[in-house]
Image (tube, rainbow, N blue to C red):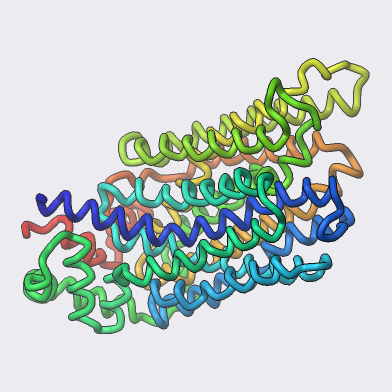
Length: 478
């Protein structure tokens, strides 16, 4: 096998295995949809009030709020790989509690624990994927975050209606265990290993990822790239503080872009749709499709849509896909809101158009999955210099978690106080604001090294940050 092909295969393998952690997150996001419908219909294994349901769904994001900064610290202290393996105990524990739950507060505790994993994944995985991949496939690998999230959601949509409450908990709890077993076989990030002065381990990790035999690892890193390696170690060990996020024009612009995209991603409605679709859709069949079937079809189409981004993100670029995605999401959510408005607030009979919300949710998902979903995570791993990546990633995860918590918590309240339509017009407005922001502010990073991205963010001023060794190795004649 040619070395370049072996390198790509190994990078994709490491990326897919690490992204199993995101499948675990996706199952937590998708779990409420089939379970809430069953509890509503049967009252088993417990009954839940509307307030208890909103807290049960939203506490996932409270846990998410609690974990990004500790996870960012831990991934810099013990490594990207080790931190994820250690913290996988939280999702495993959450599903044990779900299995034995008999009251709402049991579910609240379980969802909080699952949320801590959400914050961990949102913080660590984009960094790991960016640091193991070559520039020409970095965008494609980063779309795995959204793809695997959707796969986890769809797994719950598919299995949930067909099995008992307890069986679903056992099925879902097996994913963290599978992740631990497989990810323990993958390499640590060469970035982190270099930052700790672990030259031998870093050379072996990099050699494996680039398709080189072990016997050439030391020569590959130490002899041909010793200067770059030493500068990288010095930069990564620079003390970090929140002030560093605002120290240079490039840092400030990168932080602005990443955080606004994070806000738009979650305010566009994705979290609420994943959790509440089965109880939001009109409770009647669409042809032969039941409500559960509609949810499953919708999830399946979302999964397939991510492949569009995977193939196009390194060809068309980030910015065109983000712009198309934002406009499409805005139109789909506005149309869904219009149907709910006409149904609830006017005398206009829309019963013959009962399939409209489902169609809008499908269209929204397609547009979300080609841009706002995967690419917001892509730029999170690209826009920051090495020494503040962990801190910036933690802040971004806090923004994602806080926004998701608010949007899910107010969903039922807005529905009961004003009408379902207002939720979807809020989603539409946020997506439209995102489109304007992308057009005027976001920069293109397709095919660029981390150093080139920093130069562009700093308006081509000389940057004090150096290029990562992963990128240096990629462009060197070895």
